Length: 338
Image (cartoon, rainbow, N blue to C red; front, top):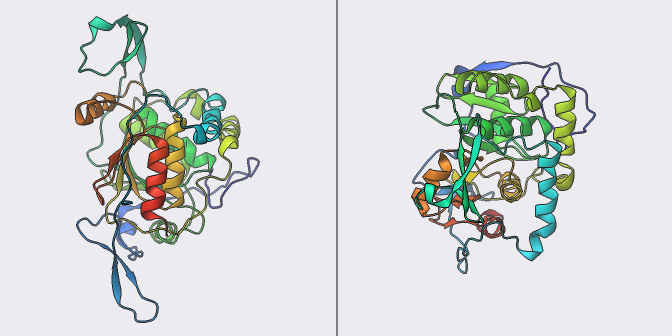
């Protein structure tokens, strides 16, 4: 049976929950409004004064001294070396699961074989020609409620990267005031991960059920071996979090943005991981554009901004667009933490 998370951080040896549930989109429509909607656009975030009850707009603006840094491929800022090293342990324990898109293939070609305006990793006068074989694409992004430091949530994030899906993540850190109550209102329990597919009306708990659903609907029908080993998968998912134990699991008071942030990232990248941790801690909803190796979205980002590098953040609430994980982390904390 698949597991579910309702506490953070979870014990690696916790028993599996027998709970298996699914909820229709009808139950989702019955949920009460929770503080503020992250799907409302063009409106300021509002908060109520405890003394007067008057709704006071909360202004979201970038730090006055923030300047997007010049991106450096594989560059690590000295004060972030141990953070990146700890996050990199995950790929070792998980054997690279989430690093490569489904049907990934690679060949080494001369650098002249691939035009400069097409994405390719270049080294020593050669380029890597990377491709993937993906399933049907959902018309609308999948919605997933989850948090870091949960092995069952990580399993679902890995399949999202493998299937190259766009997903709106609603972070549910411990003591988070917004999306944890919303999950209970929608599905009846505060357990994670929880998925809603607006394309089909399907909603469900249980990481294994979510994975099977996604690979059947948007993949090539088979669950990767590293995600289908039962207890061994769960144990290695837990070990993958050792280097960043506890990060991305507890709520830090923050402003709720009117619009979800957008980020180009993938689960297997340590640079993306430290940004994801902060997004979860601040309970910031975000639209993830998965871009694992072989993803066509690498070319799309190159065409959009002139280069590919992950993570890349665009904040529609402030207009800030920036590469570099360390800068993104500082920007998020300065802009949204209260």
